[in-house]
Image (tube, rainbow, N blue to C red; front, side, top):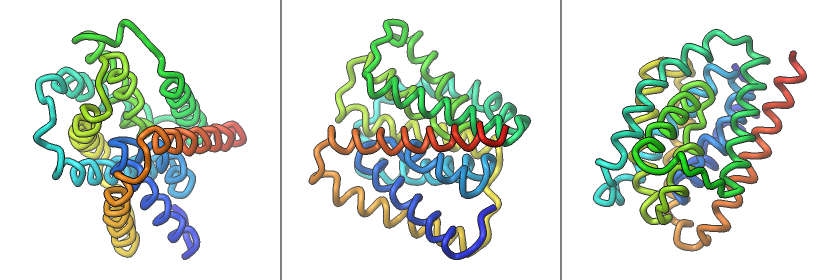
Length: 243
């Protein structure tokens, strides 16, 4: 685990930034923060902390948008994710750290590039597409902390608007991150670090809410994806260096 006040401050900044972008766009905490959290805390603790914080910020976002959640449409995604979360946790617990870092870097980078390209995949439509997306998302969420891109790709192929996507992504984020934390347990942080992470999450949520109406959706989305791409490539590089 990281030590020293500089690392702790950096941890707080990463969580605050991730919480801000997720509050603005409905997703993005893990894409922005998970690679940095993994580098600061190690793969196991970094991923589960990303799960905890992403779930919390999703719950905060639902306070305003829960009436717009399409529960029936989300059930196949959630059911499929529930089946693959344990597999992701099992794989992550057994891989050597360099292999896990490299794998996470590949997953994040590939997912971001697919989302940036707006990939159209006919098989991701309908109930079958929801099951496939949910299964991929659950595995990626518990193993690497990045379940959002699979859901984003499903939403693109299902023709969801941004307004439809945000509350449903937040609802999904609460549930799938709860699954992931249940499978792996809470991160082992000191009491001061828990206070720091909680404060950064709350401040990030407030900042994201304040900025949501001022930054165009397209610009915010582009920023999230570029930050995520940089984090994915950095994590991949560290993993390959350690092999």
